[in-house]
Amino acid sequence: MTESRKFRMGMVGGGPGAFIGPVHRIAAELDGRIEMVAGAFSQSAERGYEEMLKAEKGRPDAIDFVVIATPNHLHLPVAKAALEAGFPVVSDKPATATYDEVLALEKVVAKAGLPYALTHTYAGYSLVREARAICASGELGPIRKIAVEYLQGWLSHPLEATGQKQASWRSDPKLNGPGGCIGDIGTHAFHMVEYVTGLEVTELNAALRSVVKGRPLDDDCSALMRLNNGASGVLMASQIAAGEGNGLRLRVYGEDASLDWKQEDPNRLRIKRVEGPEEIRHAAGGYLSADARTVTRLPGGHPEGYLEAFAVLYREFADVLTAWKAGDKKSLPATLPGIKAGVRGMRFIDRAIESSKSGSWIKF
Ligand code: NAD
Image (cartoon, rainbow, N blue to C red; front, top):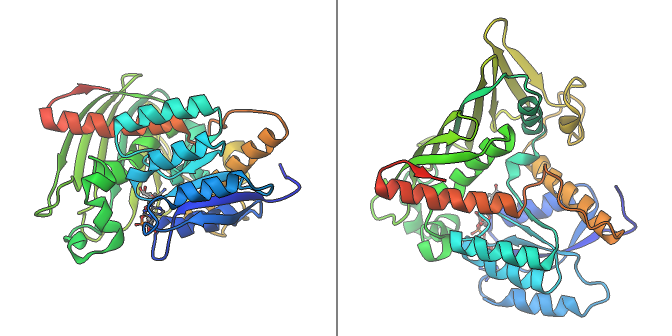
């Protein structure tokens, strides 16, 4: 889908030294359909986003949507202000800082009736789309077991004590919300489970720990899960796994076969069967599902990665905006995470904390 002009984006967050704001800018502009024209980038102007929205609302060439790349405590107020001013939203995850907040946001999104997308980046990888298509096709047989891990080592020492930007707000419950590692990367792992398998978690037994002395939020999490088809799952998320970088890995075991995808080797998807040799599917293979091929930009052997996956989410969002401008108020495609994924993710954090406190299984 193409349009006669580029969509105009206004960004909140993503100032100098920020991590994900610049990634959003690169990803949004990669396909040449979106340009950043406005922003409230820094915390020095606490309510700068309100001024931006006010100014944009009156312009003939106003922004078409708002991107939120701030610490978590601002996700709800900024999304609410943007939607109430009539602007669609792309927000980074987790959707809000707390579960109560996401329930409020869900109502705001429904009332505004505008597109709201959530950047669970890993949903944009072509081989994650392939894994999703494989699960939906039944090729693995009935799914019995899921193992997901997201291991990082960057918080192995008290980095927040040095004033490091990303570590500082993530260690402050007021800015981050009550779930530390479980909210920051556990939600990505949880999203992968439901997104790829199409199943839903129904029960959870989680153990959260704060390993680094003086850290008020969890930095190491383990959880057992039960899913709505009777499958069981194991989720590990840790930010004190010394030496790990961005070790997200998903394995799904069916009765007949299994799949294995690793974010640090994203252009290969391994399929193993009870009998027979291991199969490796390569990104851009002509034999892949249509879902995987449509989000592939380069010929085989030319690695695509994090930025391209992120850009896939923006491409799908641009498609939605194009349809809206043409009067077709369609909802987000099922491949693009939205408010439903946001509510599930926040519920996951809430339930995991509750289960860890009580030391028992808890209904989702
Ligand atoms: P960061 O600290 O690097 O950047 C946050 C930015 O927000 C900073 O530039 C800060 O100045 C700005 N900010 C703070 N208060 C503001 C205000 N009132 N108005 C405008 N700007 C303000 O943090 P980060 O690591 O980039 O994380 C930002 C968000 O992105 C978090 O919600 C995080 O969970 C999410 N994130 C998502 C992914 C992903 O894979 N999708 C990866 C990293 C971070």
